[in-house]
Length: 250
Ligand SMILES: C[S@@+](CC[C@H](N)C(=O)[O-])C[C@H]1O[C@@H](n2cnc3c(N)ncnc32)[C@H](O)[C@@H]1O
Image 1 (spheres, rainbow, N blue to C red):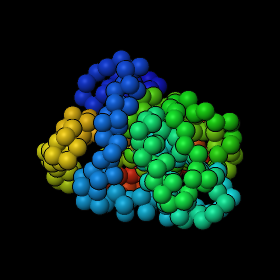
Image 2 (image 1 turned 90 degrees about the horizontal axis):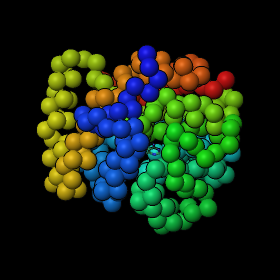
Image 3 (image 1 turned 45 degrees about the vertical axis):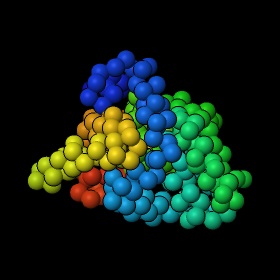
Image 4 (image 1 turned 60 degrees about the vertical axis):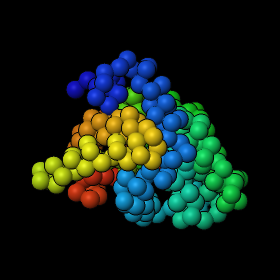
């Protein structure tokens, strides 16, 4: 299979690879201030349970360097901090300054400014040294990246030997009857909530379409292995509405 086959897709539209990154930044510019409210509305609060599950799998502890890529408003990073306690280094990286700005303000409000580093950057070209990170997370982010295989290679590069990669992403419901119900919900309900609350139907239409284009659970495992990860595997949540992939750099 060709490397990076999704480079021309922006939802259902075909675009030049360079344009996709710009368009994705635009999507999150327009939703940054409503992002967390929209997550609750669209998932019926389920995203909190999914994220809790991810944190239980990671079992954060102090003394490690955590890198949360596509970290947006800091939701995953804050959960890592809460679970790990003091004495960790947490780097939040995102393409979009508006999303990071919301997160940074929130960290200041919690008195956590010194625990975090906020970096504007691209998952495909991480501004971090080789083998400098213990735990890499990317939650609801890999789907938006133009070149998934490049992002996986970058994750592998920055992880220390013994470090671990986690990706949480909307995935594919494998049970046909439930898949139909989920499809109907995604097509009809999510863009309407987007219109009603964020006044931005197109961004949420993009979200639905990008989920459909994302590799299947098994395909992503295959691509993780190609990037060098060992023991790559996935866990489905809610029948595959969301999947958590994990792998080791050994
Ligand atoms: C759906 S949000 C997820 C935010 C957060 N991880 C969470 O779970 O709440 C997706 C984020 O990915 C970021 N993003 C998209 N493409 C990216 C890239 N190539 N590199 C870094 N961040 C990217 C967007 O700016 C956005 O903040």
